[in-house]
Image (cartoon, rainbow, N blue to C red; front, side, top):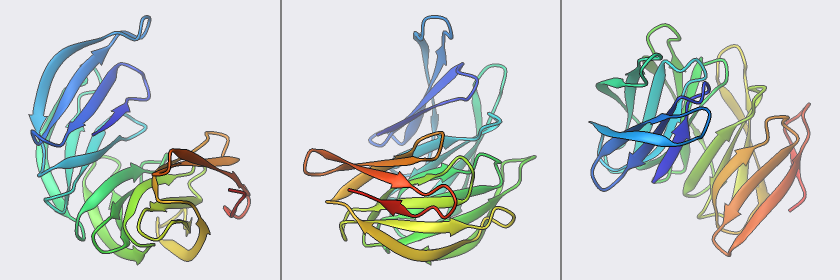
Length: 219
């Protein structure tokens, strides 16, 4: 369903929703070729997957299980271990992590919220910080590289939600939105000036981002 790559480029991970596993691949950094077909069990119907910038943790959003799975990653081999989980609200679709590694967020498709977690940067463990309301059926979720904003693609309400993030605590505030037609997945450019989301109607919405306020403009 979803896929992610480690910051050092040596590992790729795929969330296999039908088999409740993660596939673990080694990546040749010269050619990009993948090898290895090992897997590790995760929660029920893993959809979203993300990896911490330091490469020590991998997380999956388990849609049917209403949980996030937490894995420790061996930074030398790329192997994953551990199968601990933490509860979310209903039907989490996707998951993202802040660049500083202190916060993890999940989009709860079933009850129109974003789940907020604090992350222990030493162990990768998560502690729930509650939820904040998003649009209807939030599907994709992403965070800006500067850590100031989180965005959700709200499939059911044809909007993108814009949240301001407290870079010290990870708390989210604000519920402003901008229109997008049945948006599913969403991402922010590394320079922070653009946000893009894929729409059910075979289009991509293109937004300009104000790097000071996080506000979006344009469609």
